[in-house]
Amino acid sequence: MDLIEELERMANNAMDSCEREYEPSEEDITRWVSDELCETVRSRKEAQGFDREAYEYMVGSDGPLAASRVTTKVYGSSASQVDTSWLLKLEGVLGTPEQIQKIANLHQLPQVFPGISTTGDALFCSINGETKESIEHWLLEKRHPVKPIFVRDCIARKALAADSVQPALGPEIQYRECAAAPIVDTTLPQHRGSSRRSFHPVIQDEYPVWYFFYGTLQDPDLLIRQQLLPEKEHPVMITAHVLGGLIKMWGENYKALVDGAETDIVHGSAYEVTSEEQEEALRRYETEHYEVVRCIITMPNQTIQGLTFRFAKPELLRG
Image (cartoon, rainbow, N blue to C red; front, side):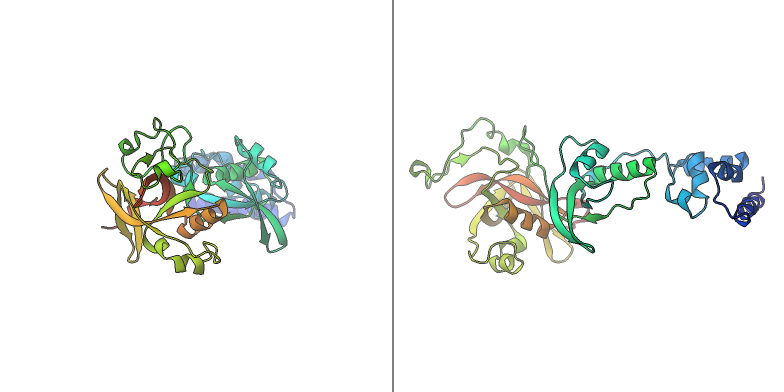
């Protein structure tokens, strides 16, 4: 068939409908797209997630039908999409965390944060990329004319497993004693100055918690200047090192910790984070390019389980 001729015929049909001053119905739109043209574009559009109905909506008017196009895209999130964090403004049909939980079929309610939007005070809930995609798909299916407000939440991911030591820096073999060894309170007199390790793994919401810092986070003045830690207490850094890691460069100026061999050593500082608020400020400073992982921190008088920021996108590194 002559594709140009067919496209001209479609345009003429559309113009006829416009001259009659009414909005086209689904039957009209179907009439615009012939079987021959649909077959011509079928293979190309199927690769983009369209079927015939979706393609017919795509070539429709700029009115309500265009705003409620339906596609048959097969939804499946990659690991990077799942790890991406977003803040969704709660309003309208997406007005409560319960609605978000139901729409996206979540196992638990999303966390809600107060904030400020262009219209004043607002509530936002924290979701990942997979949930964002589920919400967008639901709105398309229901043909809601809602335009949800998503804000990229650039925060280092923290998802510590409850049934294993993962995610952890370096080979898992160095954590083999975690499950069996008793918890050691190094503040007790019998353990002070001991080289014995406290091998219980840090849990997700455990505070205070020791962090291993390297690079810019070792500078107390920077932490105060960036309002990452309270100004009233000058941060106390303790010389420390971790095993199982390597330092590479991200760009020209930024150090990035990645997995290494069990014997690889990275030197830096240890700092005790006392609250979730402090930790969240540090995670936002590091951004989504990093992730919180478990590690073994060795200080002059003790070796303990702690956390650190591992670079999450090694493909961006050099050296």
